[in-house]
Image (cartoon, rainbow, N blue to C red; front, top):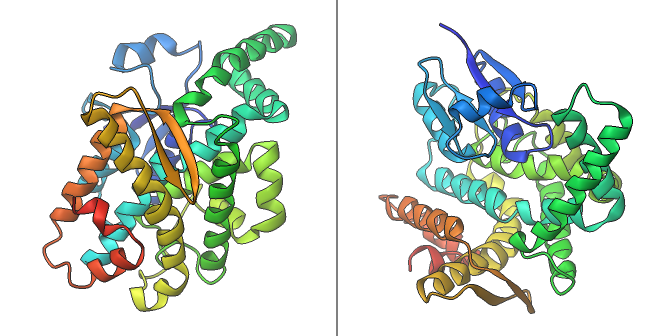
Amino acid sequence: MPPYRLFGSELSPYSVKVRSYLRYKDIPHEWVVRSQNNMAEFQQHAKLPLIPLLLTPDGASLQDSTPILEHLEAEFPEPSIHPDDPTLEFVSALLEEYGDEWGNKPMFHYRWTYEEDQRSCASRIAAENLPDAEANVLDQVAQGIVQRMVPRLSFVGSSEATRDGIEASFKRQIGALERHLAHRPYLFGERPAFADFGVFAQIYEASTDPTPGHFIEAHTPSVLTWCRRMLDPTCDGPFESWDTLGDTLAPLLHEEVGRTFLPWSAANAKALAAGEESFSVELHGKPFSQQAQKYHAKSLQALKARYAAVADKGSLDPILDAAECRSVLAA
């Protein structure tokens, strides 16, 4: 049977996320850096012009990193990325969603706001896309990439008005993670959970860009070590219990999920339901405004359904209440 083929990019957090999972499960696969040399094959299989694209041995094509991981987990259940404890399983899924949907904002913001980061990323993208091009051609292509990507900052709500809030969120996130990861190799213990794949990928990409990368290296060495470990993670023991995780994981849930991600996600969904094109919500005492986006509303509905499916919420609800999360999830 031929191996899986993963079309992606080193600059794509969602591609790196799926590749990390494939490596963890030791699933035979080929990493295909999407470029002009293989664009025809990519377009033949992709329903959307987005990476990652996973081609399965039986000829199916999958896109969107979270459904890809869920599909593969059903095929390759061991070692599981889900703790046996339903409470921890949901908390892990909640953090995975946070990483994908909110964690992408600071990564994208830093990458395309600051000139040094723009040049660095655009040059690497150009080199990936045109591996045989001359230097002068790559320079021109990189300039075009910057011109195309900077206006897309609005898609993640990045603007002069939200700059401080986005960067404060990033520093809160990695600060909380530094304290948590100082005593364990992965978020839930000695093996990666669903959450690790979603959260690490965005921070790893930020670590490769000059501005956030220098900050991570200087202030959060345990986070940097974890990001590098997650490039090829291993199962080195069991998941922990909330009793040992809670002291340092609860602050991340409260400050970044309960007070940042979920209020933003709920405001986005409310705006779409009202037929509004944009919305504004107060996060940590400051207004955050952006365009309303349908995909995020669908992902919130999926998260609510996952919460509703937890049969016994006796241990879960107190954790969510303390983190100011349950009011959105149960609505």
